[in-house]
Length: 266
Ligand code: ATP
Ligand code: MG
Image 1 (cartoon, protein in one colour):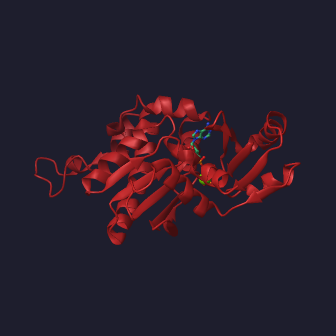
Image 2 (tube, helix red, strand yellow; image 1 turned 180 degrees about the vertical axis):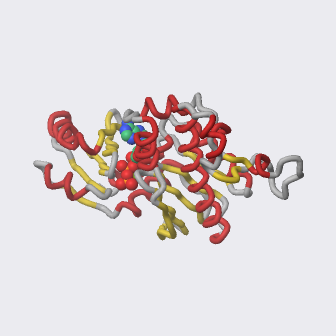
Image 3 (tube, protein in one colour; image 1 turned 90 degrees about the horizontal axis):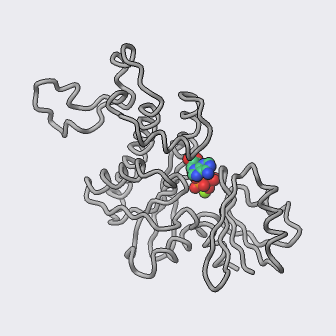
């Protein structure tokens, strides 16, 4: 069996062919030994290709030889495969929101990394822990869906009281900017989590759309496990990307792009 693996900072993603279809499975990166055991037990004669920041760590633990490929190129291959030929055009941007965030420009199938940010999925886990003590990802995103950002974030219209603002009053003037209000009305855990996701989404969409303007690309493909079970984050990226006239693209199984690229390299 052919198996492509993307060993990231937070999650190990695998893509393999079974019944003539690509199947997917992921493991937490701390559970690397469970992933290794599954690979050894589940597959007969595996042919493995690994990518990602932890590919060396994983390859060393395998009792079969494994090929390794460059993560950025594998991810580009995976995106192209998932999107299908031609759908993204000659050039596009992809933004990988993993533990951190990485922005890439692709022209005729070749990628160049053009930027990034330490604000990413890891920021959600870290700030969620510090503010609420929560540690379980699914619990965090579920709680965030009931939150009200207006209890935490300052909007433009909150500043321009009674005056017509020069930009949309609904834009965020200051993430977490309602300090004065919050001293009197402590926001709930859900409110804080929703505001954290808002902060992350708005930072990512700002740098991504600026890069898209600079490179004059139409589509911005957003990938990474940070979008799993997290419609709040997706909605922010969709709304603001469209606002500046760019097309947001979310690919089904997009978080497996790196693993698919590794699979295709075997
Ligand atoms: P990097 O590419 O930066 O090395 P990675 O490839 O491990 O990291 P992804 O798997 O794309 O990163 O995304 C990790 C993020 O996805 C986490 O920070 C978290 O916000 C989110 N996430 C989704 N599902 C889970 C989960 N089951 N456990 C932990 N985090 C999850
Ligand atoms: Mg990754």
